[in-house]
Length: 249
Image (cartoon, rainbow, N blue to C red):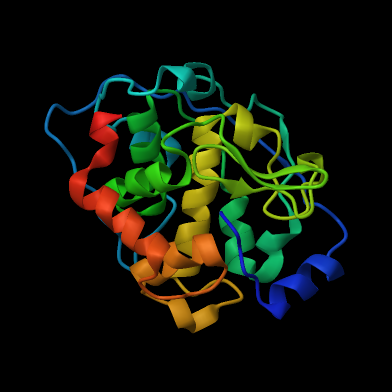
């Protein structure tokens, strides 16, 4: 999330919440390579959808795709091992549903960058091509990307620029948290960010109904911290979506 502008409600939440949440990954589900030959387009699931879909369900339906960014290979095949403590930060506590969604983030998938983004989109009912386009805007599909640097280090990490800490260092895990796994695992990064998108889209954030059922307002909020409409960031994502820029990386 580049240059976030956060409302007073979130600032208060961060100050008031001193404890960084810890989750334990209790089970591991291996992804299957038995996937359908026909292209499956997920699109954005309606508000009434039961989500997240199971990790294995989406793993079995992701379409095989070539790797476009060789530098992502290690992170694409790294998942948090069973029993890992996932240090999710206090920002998730702004809404009980968001907190429950974040508790279901596992990063439990290995594949190419295309496949991982599609898996996360399937799990959380998000448009897979829009998620791929947003990853172009955030990092040009570079899982090793670090951004939003302050005097103590980088605040945002991974292919989708999850803000793990504010201020840095990232080990503070005092924002969305999840460090170091958001940088180590592409699937964990995408899973966490897609959980955020679904939470905000369904009105379960400090923004409430202002972004309810508002797809581009949700995308805008990832960058700005609020629904700023079809701003420059959204237009950039829309451009990449329209041209499917990730296919030529």
